[in-house]
Amino acid sequence: MQYLVLVGALCSVVFGSVYLIATIQGKAQPNKVTWLLWAVSPLISVVATIAATGFDWSILPVFMAGFMPLLVFIASIFNKSAYWKLSFLDYLCGIVAIFAIVIWRLTDDPILAIIFSILSDAIASLPTLHKAWLYPNTEAPIYYIGGVISSTSAILAATTHWSFSTASFPIYLFILDTSLMLIVLIRKAALSDNKMIP
Image (tube, rainbow, N blue to C red; front, side, top):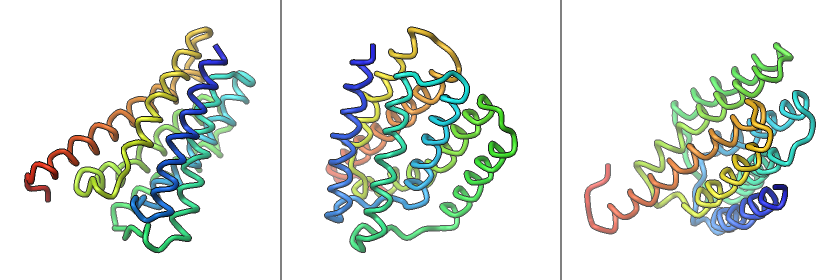
């Protein structure tokens, strides 16, 4: 089963690198709040899962789900053409997401850590979901396609010894990446058909 997870992790690297290159070239304009917290939340979940159950191959795609956004976030800082203006919603979501992380740090409970890391990640995703809906051309759907493949491999790997710790974050990532992939693809198609998009 670890081979399946390795394939999923490799997909994260390949598809994530395409988004990273698009960011460096200024073709993608990632929301910095989202991408920073997308880096932090999965990495917290990895640490919490290891604390709860020890190392398991199913956490590798979750690790990659944090590592690749970290690289994208760094690239967006240094490339002015990848700039996306942050709004009140972005900052509000960032503050709430950080608050969820702080709660975890105060609990020392691995299960709560995973719950709050998912909550934090989901809240951090709201600005990008909003941006993808209104301005789909600022996003590259390839990253989310890779995320669907990678999270699917993690879910399949978790079935060998199913538990909340091993399965919850991959299932959440599958739902999030599928949602973003569909939003970007559908809204880009609507733009190409000259339909009005606010």
